[in-house]
Length: 102
Image (cartoon, rainbow, N blue to C red; front, side, top):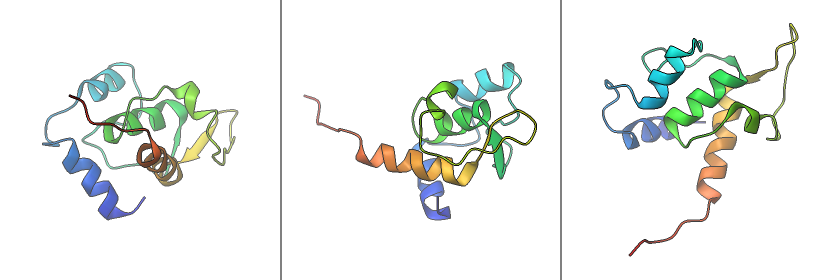
């Protein structure tokens, strides 16, 4: 995901100084990332789901297991490259069905 796309995702969420509900929930559950921290290079499913939920759309960690991503398992924990996760999530978001509500 390019810096420009990431900045547009940040600006779409409004003021980034306020935490969204999903960030508060992820911080309460002990995930390793919150909105005030920089994005990690690699992250587990829960952290990746929190990042995608913050920037793009709600997603569960189990859903990430079905996406065609390169998974690494260094210590029996599956981790993904965050840039790859955001790139694929952005692609899915752009390809999603959209319509105008009345």
